[in-house]
Length: 78
Image (tube, rainbow, N blue to C red; front, side, top):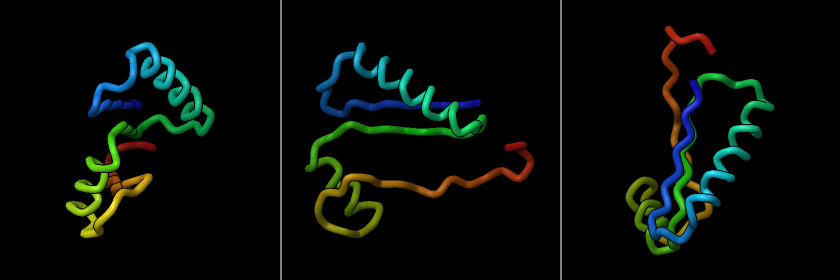
């Protein structure tokens, strides 16, 4: 199963944009042939991402991307 989540922290984007983006990401992912994964995308300000960067990585300042490891359940077929 493929799960794609979008969060617009500051409500800057219209649903039509997020819907189109979701379709684009879904098509892009299908090109890679993966069937079991989860993708979360958060749209936020530099201030918000700076807080997350400091909380999770202990680093001050904003960043373009925060990524987290995905724990694989060995009982699930990929």
